[in-house]
Length: 251
Length: 330
Image (cartoon, rainbow over all chains, first blue to last red; front, top):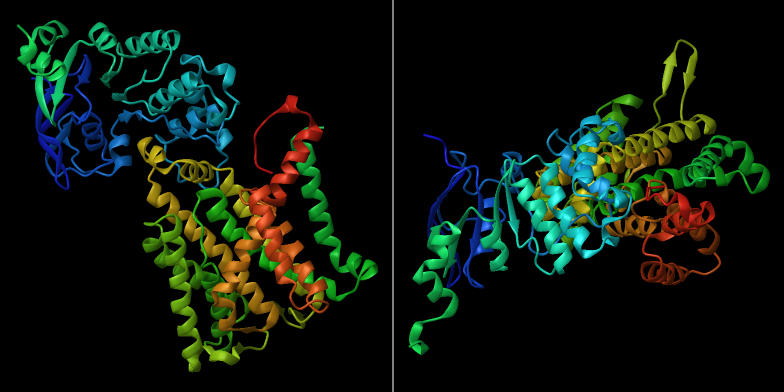
């Protein structure tokens, strides 16, 4: 039996009186492009925060490739090979694109080397350049990240995650706020990446999700409502109710 | 001319001036300016320790005087009470300051922004009052004087800081070594990590950087730098005093760093020089000259948040032409 990619085992997150994630249970296998969808406030981003350690869980367990990573420090989870992008795009604005990617790449080799010159770290330089090339950011390599266009910031955001050589990539609304051309480019990139890295994507654009995902998990009110292939999800009556409201006005 | 050549040239001018100051300054101004320049170099290290934390890691410390004071007392207590020699006393001061920074840092770097600023002030106040009241050890208000042991003593040959040239070049050597260490760290992977944490600490941890350890190491290095400054100042003045641990000293260092330009290696020297020269020239003419300093600080923060270092960088970039457009630290 293969080890599951990610196990969400009865995970709950309570914010005062609000249960953002409520006894969520699901298991994702490797080799697929997973999507998590759900109405606003369903607990998707909170779940990402719990997985990556940016928020402590209230109860339950999260296992990544068989290891319990519940409430581990954020940087340790990252070092295990679990990378994520943020919904509100955030890169290191005061650094150039190449410097952004360099530090992300360097994180794999340790940064506590106070007496070596950072420009002489060959492996990190190569890794940074490779990611820069892959995402088509070479033309902007020496530009400050703060001066990039929105679409390029979104790409760099993915680049930061990629430079850490992740096994699993969590993308939180990667195409949110993009125009049609940028969306197309980014979606193609994600599909391309999915061939070699496991990806979980949160996305509101249902059309995109149904096009690219191998498996969809639907969340509502902090719990898992349904899980299956895009076809199964499209037919699921519970999902229709969650998205379109109760059927009172039908008939 | 590229940005790099201009900056190299600027550094060269600074180095040449520093190495020839004992002969140049008496010709153009007055011999006592050599002492003032020694003092500037020492104090610039304290400003540099603020700059390392604020300019590179994004932590604003209002308590650097504590490590300065530890360096001072380490030297004075080591020499006057424990019978250490010159290097023993100097080493004791630096080690004491660094150890203090390690202990305070473990708690302080859990916090950021105003909470961090407050806890650094609180630490320095605690030890200020401790130093003030522990008279048998620290001499309290009167301070703790000591007599200068020789730097090197081989047979008849002896070097001591009582020789003004020996004192000046000892200070230059130590201050130079500190800037070399800082320069090295800033251009290392750790230095890159400092800047990354300053830019966005959440993102830094998400790419796998241990933000806490990175901040702590910066805090300890900056305590070490402030400690060297304090140890040098004790040797320079032949005594230690709690007055130098008070938070207005920390505050002054912050002002020097901000005016000089945070986030640049040599900004603190420029800021410290400017304000100490201003003090020497104005304080006996106009007792209320700090009002002027206050106005300069406000104007700097509003119109030139990167200080003189930032203005310099902008001018150099313009002069070198935008086509070389490479972002970098002076």
